[in-house]
Length: 265
Image (tube, rainbow, N blue to C red; front, side, top):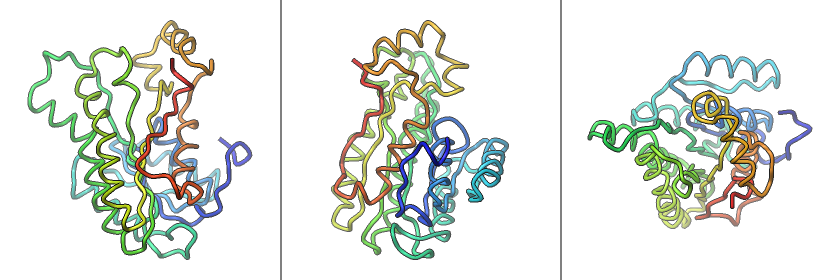
């Protein structure tokens, strides 16, 4: 990604942004996109090596080093503390630095495949925690920081998986279906204070992990044939939507799902 092939949002420069699951895949592209906008970005991930490497690379390439914190989003206390670190870093949208958290991006997830027979209570709880509960915990905490300023953007993450014929994703798909209700409910609750809540619903984004673990060349050809746009979708495509929803240019958008799937039919 370069500064020449992305829209420029002046109000994101200096804005404090928090991204979960930002060390690889779509999350890494989101972190990079915000850094290239000049945002003061904090991101968390379990993969400390990848997180540190991304932070160092972006610092060298952009001069804007994102702050990486190794944390498990299912640890509520650690998640809140990391969001507080973003609150302390930068400015809210269009205002002077020091005005606190402006944008929350609830990207973290784990689409581990599983047979229904393998799902026991412990697996269920862990899967719900990483794919759904942390989005609520983070949004709840972020709203507490944002509401006094009368603005802010919270971006949740759903998935097209519940609507496709993907097998072995029962708990994941259940969580991602629930994100729609979570987003609409929080948008109604938070709107009185000027805080917007939307969700991004990625389609078949062909990240390195997807290609390594799940998507065969034959699968990719089928996916491209089913999309109206017959090209590979990548994390950058999702990152561009995150920038739009973070910026005040989308100030009239809340309680909505924004689908980035190349037009799956």
